[in-house]
Image 1: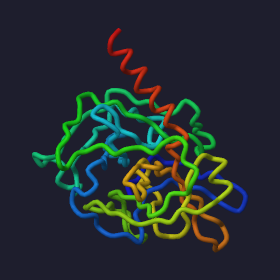
Image 2 (image 1 turned 90 degrees about the vertical axis):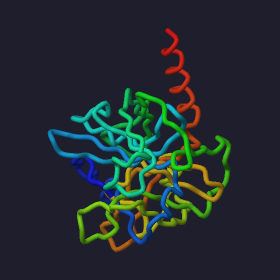
Image 3 (image 1 turned 120 degrees about the vertical axis):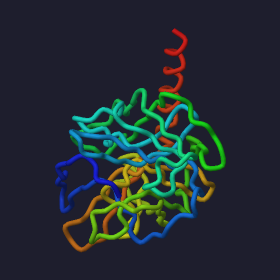
Image 4 (image 1 turned 45 degrees about the horizontal axis):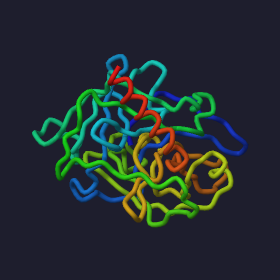
Length: 255
């Protein structure tokens, strides 16, 4: 997908880590079939920066905390809603909204970058819902099963041989795995080449009931020939945090 901030790989035992971004092994989504998808664009020293996200309600977007680079403020970013073709962001049906304030999870660490990789973005004006722009629901907090029939979507590169992003929204099905390391880091995981890699960060992991179960975070690529493991921040573990951020924002609005 899109290129993010330059990140130093986190070297672990027999693995190294990169951030998520390209839809590999997928296909083009039916135009506007994912009305919750958000295209984020910003600038850093004159260079464009991109990230994915998804619409929670008329005021807030969810994305990954690591999308906020040290030298970039999301107040410089623009949210695009109702996009399918990334080159046509000036079409009348596309909503272009600036970000008023960002709320990265307070326990996200730019050192480890593996847990609590979630952030809320407050929009400067309310999103207008229509057939092409709709929020997505979140799962309940008490889920005790592994979701099935999941997929991820985004505008990232769909070919390992190119550095160019996809013009149209792409999607790919992923199968979640039962992994102890993923559970410890409050994440869902999928395994294999198909899925997101560098650049799709912040997009949703959507499962069978059309709810957002995770936020595209990072991928561990083993130094051996084992398949890569894709990590998605588990939303069910952050529902209370999401509610608290929104409630605090509402209280500030009335002060």
